[in-house]
View (cartoon, rainbow, N blue to C red):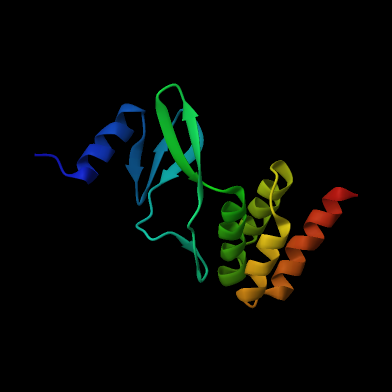
Length: 127
């Protein structure tokens, strides 16, 4: 009898991914897969909305761009991860986001100074 986890692992392996630590990697793509235990959240905020991407009969649920930016900013806010800051900027400049939502979240996390770093980087790109 298969557990749900064993079923997921089998399916992922069929797409060429292998488990590396807590994520899954493939030589066919630079992207990794991560299946964090729930509930999902960024900082103190739970993620309650997501996007569903459909192709043929397949569906994939992914976090919204705003939550992706928040996740990357959280890495910068809480662990001084400058790669996270750069990744947040990359997502914010390559997709449509609700900037006010991200700003409000950052203020609730009491990270106005580091949020200003994010804002400055975005403004630099706009020039």
